[in-house]
Image (cartoon, rainbow, N blue to C red; front, side, top):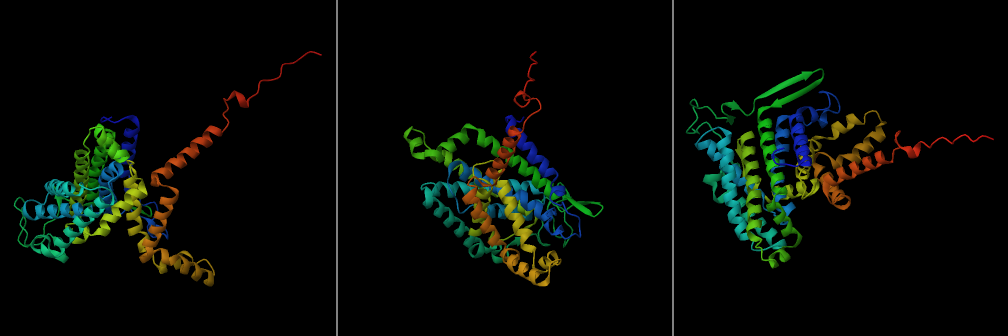
Length: 405
């Protein structure tokens, strides 16, 4: 199917079904219940899941295949975001031209950064990319204020008059897809359950599926094999007469275009852009996503992005009041003790929990969450193989023939 083998086709189908049913899967608990705190099926968070999934997929093409660790990928995310918002301000509120422009501009910027940074490898390459990202952040924050809006950033205003959009005087434009507002939502209530289906989320999910499919084709292509050869032993590859630089530069540019696509989608969902998207912490975040999920795997970066964004938006909102509600059935002294022990790991301390999870994954699951899933699958297959079958002749001995005395 679509040029993929059976295994990859099945994986793509599973991802598509999960994306389609995300509002149900991420809202398993009824509204008003004590566990509703863990529901993540609201539009803003679902959009973040798929957008940062795209960001991590692109980063994995560079890091997972070539082994080149970039600490500056947030620069392409920010550049793509600025390109998208200016397209909306000047030309049209339709998100498609904005997303296309974000990919193009981020790709061109990645070409320049990659051409310089890839002259070095290892830690020197990583430091060069970090330097480019921090310079980009500094330019966006102060030097290029007329273009970037400085500290306050950019957003659509009542004074903006896009060339191809008909807005009334004083009206603030909204991102749309051929006239359909990206914030359009439909709610389905069944009993105490409430599910929200958002236009913006499904557009982002379709783009994510396309991006995921493209990454699968790259992984399985001869180009992907060359990138793996670079990661395995670049020096030996050079000895064979093959020049690895064009391949690594191509991987860097493609990865930057993925980041630009994610930046454009962020603007399409929320028409605000600030320089904080280019800060070094944003670059570090995508590194964590990829390693947590499983660098070099297809689905791993998406899982890592989902885990981090879930913790950032759900675990961080749990406070001491919610903990007291959960442990209210316990005696007062024990309730206070449990709240005292748990509280440092939630709310503002969610980074501590993330750090512990990251340490555990790196130590016990070097292949990330994907390796954990593979181990569980192997365990179940082993148990199934060890279970006696009714049709197994070894467990049904033949009857002893009767011997006449």
